[in-house]
Each structure stands twice: as C-alpha cells, then as structure tokens.
Figure 1 (cartoon, helix red, strand yellow):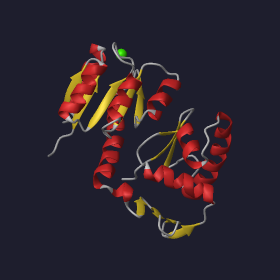
Figure 2 (cartoon, helix red, strand yellow):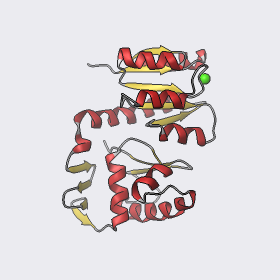
Figure 3 (cartoon, helix red, strand yellow):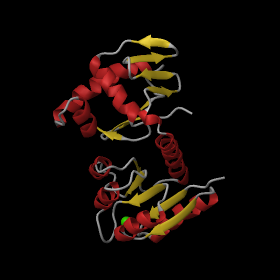
Length: 232
Ligand code: CA
C-alpha cells in the first residue's frame, strides 16, 4: 500500500507528538518541522502529500508559509489554529489552505480532516476537476450543456445558483471563504453581500439536499464559508 507522507509543522511539542503518534497509529508516514522556514524547506525537498500547518510559528506567520508554498505547489494544506476567532482561518483559506482544525482538537477530528483531504487529493490527482462532466453521489453537472441532474432528473437552476454550484464542485473538498465565493460568482467581495450569498445558498441547497437538517453535499462553516463534500 502506498502510504501518504504527511508534513507536520508545529512548534508545540505535546501537540506535535499527539499528531505524529496518531499518524503512526493509522499507517501514515510523516516528517515534522518546528518552524516556517523548516516547513518550506521540507515541502521542497520531500514533496509531502498533505501538510498539517500550525499558524502560530516562532519565525514566520503561518499565512506567509502558505503563500510561499502556494507559489510553486498545490499540496493540500490543513491549518491548525489556536484561536477560536475565524479571521486567521479566513486569511489562511484565502492564502490557499484547504481546511482547518481548531485547537484543542480530538484525534477523531484530525483523522476526519485527513480523510476529507485524501478524497480531495484523489480528485486532484485523477485530474477529474478538469472533466466536462462532474459526478458526485447522485449529483451530476454537465458543464458543456450547463445542465444539472440529481438522481437522474434535471434540476432547474438560476444562473447565479449554477455559477455557485460549479464553483463549489470545481473545488470539491476545499473550504471556500465567503470572500472567495463573492469574488468568483459576483465579482465583488463586500461584507454586505454575504447576506445575498446566504439567500442563494439556501435556494441552491433546497434543490440539492434531501433534508434541510442533513446536508449531504454542501457543508456550512459558520462565519467562514462553504465546502462541497465528496460523497463516498
Ligand atoms: Ca504554535
């Protein structure tokens, strides 16, 4: 079995040990770095499959580490944030991170994030994000004709709903911030537009999800944004 290589970037020894012990117990390979410069060097020399990156590092800010790595690599990055405020997570996601974990986190949460990221990695490696047809569970988007099908039946979408859906689908597995969605769907990123984004997201979900309380496809990240999940 081809084990994934995880780069763990964390200056706090107990947290780093918790992560590496968990990875070892679940058959991941790992390397670790204790600062931002080390993280950048290890990414370049070891080409990890996934990076777990603490945002509060002793030398460079974690968001700058993401920007520097993103200048040459698309490796999935899960940030680890000590603060519960959303602003640093939003900055990290806008800089190119894929997902986030908030300290303190449980071993189960860590493993769940890794599984979601592995599915994203599989999509990236198969190149299917470039396909002309998108398939996820019972959802099917034919990009060429602009038609959306659920359980084999065509669903009518407004142009904005369709743009929103395509953006989420093209970034399956990645948490997209409100700002990123607003810029890509409406071409603006005013804070006041988040309200209209919520309205369109609600109508889109009504068409896609079987129950309002059990979203299967689109996950909400309160105060941050949304993510299309890959259905297994
Ligand atoms: Ca730290």
